Amino acid sequence: MKIIYHHRTRSTDAQRIHILEIAGAFEELGHRVEIVSLVPTDTAQQDASRDAGNPLWQRLARKIPFVYEMVQLGYNVFGIPMLLWRVLRERTDFIYERYSLFNFTGVLVARLCRLPIILEVNSPFALEQVRDEDIRLLGFARWTERAICNLATRVIVVSTPLRRMMEQEGVRPEKLEVMTNGVRLEHFQSRSISITTRRSLDIRNGEKVIGFVGWFRKWHGLENLLAAFKYAELSGRAKVMLIGDGQAMPELRRYVKEHGLDNDVIFTGPLPHEKVPEYVGLIDIAVQPAANEYCCPMKILEYMAVAKPIVAPRQENIQDVLRDNGEAQYFTPGDVQSLAGALKTLVEDPDRARKMGESARRAITERGFLWQENAARVVRMVRLEQPIVPG
Image 1 (tube, helix red, strand yellow):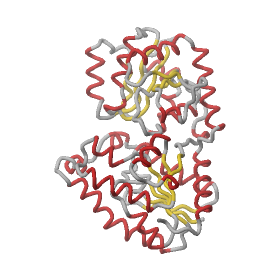
Image 2 (tube, helix red, strand yellow):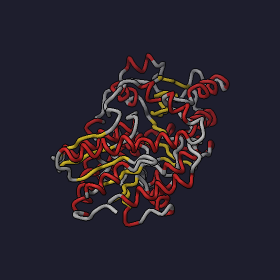
Image 3 (cartoon, rainbow, N blue to C red):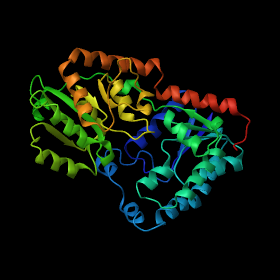
Image 4 (spheres, one colour):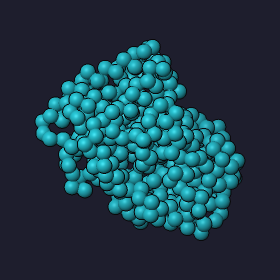
């Protein structure tokens, strides 16, 4: 099949990984994929600092009422002819689109060309952008989100709570399909731990490494992780390693200094993509300190792929991926004492931690959390729907 993958993103960090992995999985199944976007998907793959922040135009647009809405709506003026031209150049079997707020491009081109379109929804952007104070037209945003999803042939959502939220917003239930994110296991082979790297980070023999990988934003709960580490009195037995960078970095550094954690917390700073596995290899306990109620964190799946024991908040979207039968050490969301207890349990019981990591790794294959499995499901959806026209 010929597949057009359309997206309107900056192609940063997890977005880029998701786009390239699902497109690559389609190709491994023997299909042809053409990615259509304004920003080349593989641009600046090594620019970790770029991925951590927002561009200047975006920061300015968000400060002026209704400008950010108009900028997003304006994409359709360029997107529709761009996508239409690419679809008409040669026979296309279906469009796969990563959903963006106010983006009618995919569903309108699909309707014009009588093609199926599979829409991948990772967040309820109308709600999310109002919460973040990016937009003000909530009613209009909710209407466009509902209209776009209902015009699609099928809508993939990444968690059970997100499916429920979309239904409550008026998306037709028969359109919705829950499909978690995936991994490519061959990218996550076990690596020998670098003694030189341990020494350079001042990790002493016997010290456990409690790690987090990602961009540091206020809602990631990293201050809670540091507070829990201090509350659990793990200094000397463990260190916290924060791999990445982001908007919350100044506050985190200030917290470390004010609470006397300078010798207990390692900030690696932004790392080139090829260096991340080496540092992840040093982690003994991987932590997801917080997560919104509807996401499917890519990092959790990657921790699972490298058999890391995972400490995570007990909430429905996380339990879509990690089950209670020894695949994770759960804590009460937002509760520092509960998080401290979870960390202490795994630091003091390495055998339990090892078995937990092994169980999480097995779950990847047993439950099909693989990009190729996801791609195969999408193709089956399209074949079942043909020759149904979107709408």
